[in-house]
Length: 318
Ligand SMILES: [Zn+2]
Image (cartoon, rainbow, N blue to C red; front, side):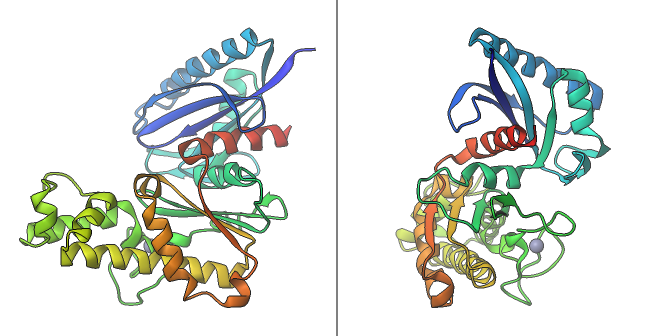
């Protein structure tokens, strides 16, 4: 009998990653590359299918075939039929992506929001993970995903877990969502970079300038280095980011009483000490009863979380 393999895809606005798994967290083969806004949907499907066919060749060389495909997309999706309602980073609106990929590849395909897929990938990736499970990812923005009773919790309209848009400063900085004072407006990688750049533009953040970071958006690791060197502007930006994310986490923990909370995403991967500082601050804001039996950890799968989670969701959907 031939073996079943599962292909996980993470289709984001700047990168696409494919990973072939046997349904566990081990990746047998991977490929990927740059992506971007989709100019021609049919052409994008064709190119995606070419990559999938290479994964199918690898499955065949290993004595099996791809039994299901899970595609994580930075998009608002309709979970029951894998329909993309809107994916602004990809420039896609109203496309039946799951149906189209299933038809083109001849393989059963499911679609999931990328943050949800990453949360599902992280769920159970460490041995003592518990349920309810909350994963928070800090990248350009701040996103979160929930697993409750072993299932992704999507909410009534699919927008559960939006921890990045919990308001922590009622009259604070304007967020990308249009509201004020969201966690993301202080702790997201883009927001942190813009705040540091604004300080540089006003002749502030001297220590950051000394290290030569005035030509691009500084990242949190660079800002933290300048803060450590005694830069007051960078210290403020870093502390505001820590407080905002800690307040968002404490809000989520007090509401949900999760067994496990995971911090992941590119910003944490690039500057892991941020997670430790956030946990320290969050500890002072959480109800002791809500935090008592909770374990907190950093991501173990990092950028593999979304493709692995998508592959596992595809396997379960068969
Ligand atoms: Zn917001």
